[in-house]
Image 1 (cartoon, rainbow, N blue to C red):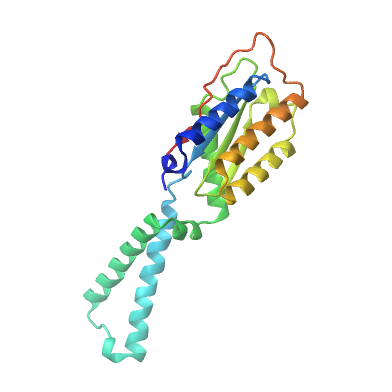
Image 2 (tube, helix red, strand yellow):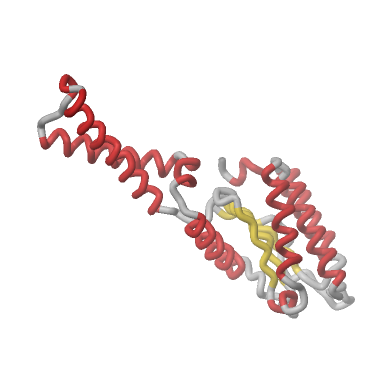
Length: 217
């Protein structure tokens, strides 16, 4: 499923309105970002190829030992069968995302998500605010991961535990299928956290970043 299929125009409008409402109260900028997948994960394709190629070779050995009528004795044919099975395994892994996810370690998922989130933080210029008070709420669907990243003007005041709570609540809502409502709740909670810590909008505050939800492939 593509990101555009996940959200209706009404969903996008609701999230934009939530950001706009939040920023009318706080001295800060909230940037929601969704990506379908944070990495290419070619290592999963290699693993899929190795698994299916090994399976095909194992079947050849088993047939040779226990089912002579299905035995393959031509070395070239054995080579072709193993290679074709490997290619098929790589193709299946590439296109069937649940299989790709199963073949990846949590380390690979976490590392890719962190790198993509850091890139998005720079690409969306979340750092580009007068008092370094930008917050990015980052969601990567394939990895089932959420990150909240605050710029240094906020992070030096607000502890990580606050963001971890927001992350946990948003993940729970996404699992229930309430993606838009979960994001709006996360935006509202970020607003409350900033207000609780003195980041109140002042008369000279201006909207420094656009309010739209960012959808990145």
